[in-house]
Amino acid sequence: MENYNSRGRIRNLLLFPRWEWKTINLEKRTLKETFISYALPLILLGAVSKFLGSFLYVRNVLDIDAYRFSLPLIHAGYFIFLQVLTIMITTVFVYGLSGSFLSVKDYSKSGKVVIYSYTPVYLLFIIANLHSSLDFIMLPGFYSIVLLWTGLPVLLQTPTNKLPAYVIILVISVFGIQYISELLLKLLTTLIFPGVV
Image 1 (cartoon, rainbow, N blue to C red):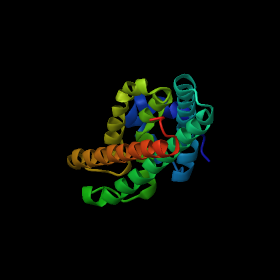
Image 2 (cartoon, rainbow, N blue to C red):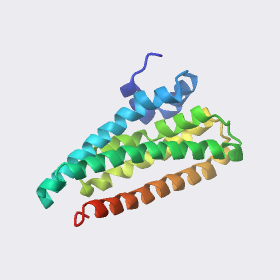
Image 3 (cartoon, helix red, strand yellow):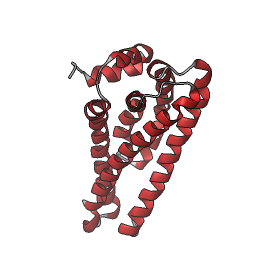
C-alpha cells in the first residue's frame, strides 16, 4: 500500500482541489482501500458525534432511562448505515450516468470521486451531529459540489460542456437519498421510541 496521509489529503482537497485530484488520479489505491483508510474513519467520527448528541438530548430533555443508551446507539448506527449507503448509491449513479455524459466508465474512479467529494460533509457532520440546532453548520458542505465539479474532469474525463447537467443530477440524487433516509429514521425512531420525536 502506498504512503498515505489522510490529514494531508483533506487539507489539499479543501485548499488545492485541482492539484489534489491529479494526485488521486495517479494513485494505484483500490476503491476498498480508499473507503477503509479515508471515508470510514471520518464516518465513524461523525457516528461518535451523533451518539454523543443523541445521548445528551435523551439525558437532558427526556431523561428516560430505557432510552439513554439504546436511542443514541440506533442513531449512530443509522448514521453509519446512511453514509455508506449514500456512497454506494451515488457511486452507482456516477458510474451509470458516465456514458451519457461522455465520461470514462470506471467504477473505482467513480467511487473515489464520490468519497473525496464528500470530504467537507464528513467533516461538518462531526460538529453538526452534536445537536439539531447545529444543522446550519452544514452550509459550507456545499463545497462538496466544487470538489465534484473539479474531480469529474480529472478522474472520469468529463467534458466541460457536460459538467453542469452531470453535477446537477448527482446533487439532486444525493439530496433525495438524504431526505428519504431522514424520514425513515424519524419513522423508525417513532415506532421504537414513542414520544421521542
